[in-house]
Amino acid sequence: LFVALQHFVTCAICSASYSKHSTQVQFCKECTCHVCGACDCAVFHLSYQEALWSELAETGDKAKETQARTQAKDNRGGGKKGQAGGGEAGKKSKKAKKKKK
Image (cartoon, rainbow, N blue to C red; front, side, top):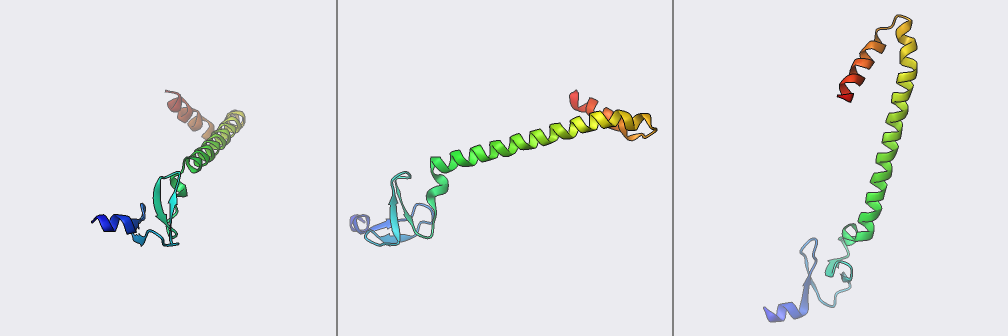
């Protein structure tokens, strides 16, 4: 067992064994483990996680802005449509009241 630990390393992601001197496996300083060329440990790095988090936050902000614009348009145009005899404006306002509760 001691000989195996000296001469072989295991990829931390796929658990494949490689010679310690193989060019197919590299030691990742950020992950502090060995990773083979077929696996990508970058998705576990903090820099990748931070970039993903900021991208998701931007997407969420854009979705909120779009929703707010849609609601503002519905509120502005809804009253006029309701006065013209359309029953949709009343339905929208009931839904809006339920959301507020």
